[in-house]
Amino acid sequence: MGASKVLLTKKQIQSRVRELGQSITYDYAGHELVVVGILTGSFIFLADLVRTIDVPVVIDFMSLSSYGALTESSGEVRILKDLEMPVEGKNVLVVEDIVDTGLTLTYVVEVLKKRRPQSLKVCVLLDKPSRRKTAFVPDYCGFVIPDEFVVGYGLDYAGKYRNLPDIRILELKKAKGQGGDE
Ligand code: 5GP
Ligand code: MG
Ligand code: MG
Image: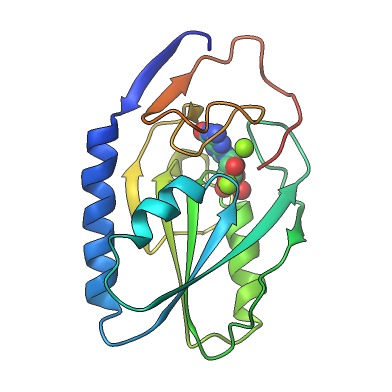
């Protein structure tokens, strides 16, 4: 890949994920949790996180697409793959890699609320609050990061770099404005 700088090491991520799992375990003690992963970016975070959660967990996935640039969502969100299971009456925890403008998660929360879960919370690994376009605030957040485009640990650029074990800042000199997946 082009010039890149490590923002969060494997070790930093691992220890923060463990803390998140402990908070979630504490908050949901005695309850069953439906963890909803937003594909594809959340898959590594979700895999690590659920193994640190010590309450009964059911896992389901949703895939969304937003029209727009590769490094930014446009706000027009569409469900490409919906949940397999109904969430009515369940304690739902949405797990996402990163919240940027907030448009994607605002949409997800709106859609899932209509299905009348018992509770609905959102856990993100990364938050870029400086770019928010909605009032969205995550219930659990791993790291607040600056306004940089990051890859690794599940996060991609044009489908690549998801397998990097740490999180890196990608230099986007001539890469802005291309289309891509979430
Ligand atoms: P939002 O709707 O909050 O603007 O965007 C959320 C989605 O945009 C994320 O799920 C992710 O797919 C993508 N995104 C936003 N910022 C970044 C970033 O820094 N790196 C990567 N790889 N994806 C990002
Ligand atoms: Mg995503
Ligand atoms: Mg992406």
